[in-house]
Image (tube, rainbow, N blue to C red; front, side, top):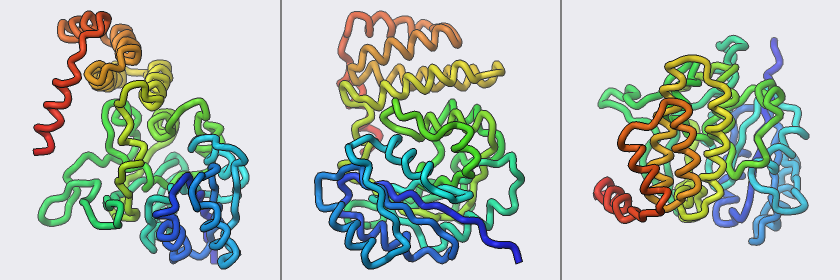
Length: 319
C-alpha cells in the first residue's frame, strides 16, 4: 500500500482573533490523516497569540512559528514553507475556513495528474463576518454545471488577462515553490505574482468542488486595492513588468495588454496617477495606445480627477 503524501497547511495569522478558532478548528477537522500543521503569527497586536498558544497546548500536532517582527504575508509564508516537509503546500489565511474533505479531495485529484501540473484550485463559498453564506466563487447553471471561466492546463495567457482563481483554494506542489524560491517578499501581496510565474512552467487543474469558505470582511486585503497610495497597486505594476519578460506569443501579448488596460483605467480613476502612468507606459510598449488611452495618458499627466465617474459606475453595478 502506497503511503499517503505529506501535506503541509501553513496557517497564516495577523490580527485574526475574531476568526482564528473557527479557522483552526477547520484545520483540525480535516479527514486526511497525513498532515503537517504550521501556525504562523506575524506579530499580531490582538489576542491571536494567546489563542494560538492555547490551541498548541491542547493539540500538539500544531507547530507554532512566530515571525519575530511584522514581516507581511509573503515573508511569513516563506518562513513556514521553507521549514516544512510536505510534498504539497496549502497557504491558509486564518480568517478563512477549510471544509473537512478539502485535503482528501485535492490529494485524490492531484494523484491522477502528471508532473506537468503544479497547482490545483477549486470553487469556494463566500462568507461574511458572522460566517453567513454570501455566494459561490463559480457561477453554475440549474444543473450545477460551472458556467464561469475555470480552465485547466496551460493557463498562463488566461492569468495575464483575467481574474478567475479563488486564492485560498490553491493546492501547490512543493517543487513549484522550490523552483520559484517562494513568494516575492518585496511585494505587498502574493497571488498574482505566484500565478504568473508558476503558470509559465506548470499546468493548473480546476477541481469542480467547493473546498473552502472565503471570508469577506472590512479588513480584507482586497478592500484597499485601489485606495490612494495603495502598496497593492505598486505590487501589481511590478508583476506586470515581470509578465512582460515572460510573454512569448502574440496572443499572450494581447492578453497582457488587456490586463494593462484594466489596471490603467482603475488606477487613473482612483487618482493613483503614478501607477496609472506606469501601466500606460507598459501598454505602449506591449501594444501601443489607442485614442482612448492616449487621452487617458494626457488626463493622467495633468492629474484631471475623474474618480467620481468610477464611483458612479460602481454604484450602478451594485444596484
